[in-house]
Every structure is written in C-alpha cells, then in structure tokens.
Length: 217
Image (cartoon, rainbow, N blue to C red; front, side):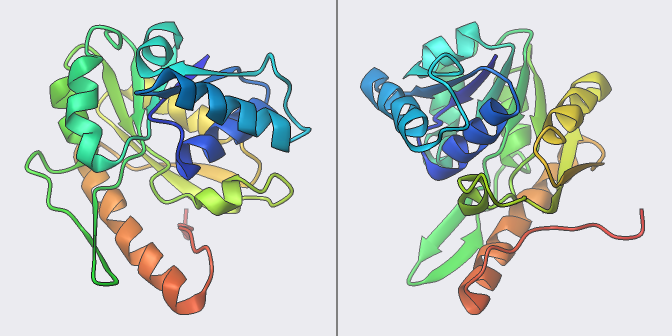
C-alpha cells in the first residue's frame, strides 16, 4: 500500500488516483482524520476507474504506519514538523518526497533556499532510518487528476539508496506516459525541486501544464 502523508491537496490526490487506477491500494492521510476520509471519498465518487476498496483515508499516522511506501505531499511549511512526528512510523520504509519548497509573493513564484539543500535532504536527516527518495516534484497535478489524459513527461528520481531509487522508478512507470530517469544521489533533488518554480511561471505565461522531458538518453 502507498500512504500519502498530507495527501489531501491536488498533487497528493492526483498521484493517489493514478496509482489506484494502476491497481495499487492507496491511503490518503491528513492531520485531521475526517479530511483524509473525505479526500478518499471524493476520488471514489468522481472517478469510475477506482473502487471503494482501492482508496482509503484517515490520519497521517495511519497512512505512515500501514504503508509499505510513504509519499510526502505536505506543504513545505509543515514538512519538518510532520516528518518529526512520524519518525517512528516511517522507520525502515521507502519515503518518497514530492515536496517543492516554493514562495508565493505578489504574484511571483520562487524557490525557497533550504538549509539542508533540498526538502528531500531535510527529510533524510529527519528520518535517518528510512530511505528517502526525491521524485514527482514536476508532474502536473491537474493532468494527474484527468485520468483520460496521458501524462507525457519524465520523472527524475534521486536517492542515496539504489534499491529504493529503483523501486520508485518502477513505481513511476505504472502511470501511463511517465518515464523514470535516474537523477543520481539525493543531493540532486535540489535542482529538481527548484525547477518546479520555473515550470509554474512558464505555466502562467502560456496558460498550460508544462512538464520535464529529458532528451538524448
């Protein structure tokens, strides 16, 4: 099962939807149990492609404790405290961090400088007994929430643990149209996360849902 920590936002729900369609059981977590339950019920009611037994919802603690792989989707403002509170629940697990630290001020979007280098590196320091993988930061939530649309993009996957990285690369390619690309060690997550700010600004200019495609490999 995939557990989505802070998964009630568009990115968490979009990824949960696509993985549920691919045949994986998912659990959408929230700080408030009812919000997690409502997010799961919303997906079930809106999309015929998934069944009630495929998608569940509740607390972040339940999502972290019951899952085999955790997906961190919290806003960056709650990233550190959420992970600190779930440290024991995530021991020994693969943790996929999709968080891109961004600042939204006066219509301008920019990347936030993270002391540890990136949100994914911060997560690894907070979760020393988990295998943190940075991935999915650049995938359009709007596209994910439109099952009829093929998400044609590359997902750059960064991790220090090769087995965890390969696990997440295989997971990513369960979504039709996505190709997983090995982005090297976790320190490279910084560049992938920061690219999200550029893509959002491009989206505003072109009124589109831009994504990343690596050529030449």
